[in-house]
Image (cartoon, rainbow, N blue to C red; front, side):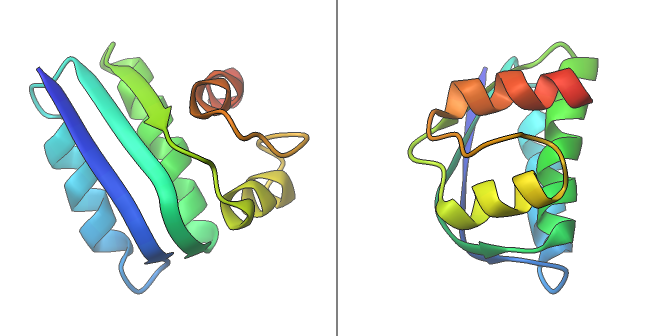
Length: 103
């Protein structure tokens, strides 16, 4: 089964639990998870950790993970600052490939 989640607005420590629960529900019993990050306005370290943990958990559970839509500048900036990617990435599937290299 395919599940899609859309992150929007501010992804931060204040709402990390909500996003974490959404991810866990989306991963449970599904073969594919599609994430749309294009509506993220800001993201902090906890949001980046959730994104990386999602990639790791999908890989562990053999779930296909796809990211659709444009990758916002703020997401790229935080991933670069965290050392997860070397340069800005606009393609979601390329982002998943790069993050799979570090998890």
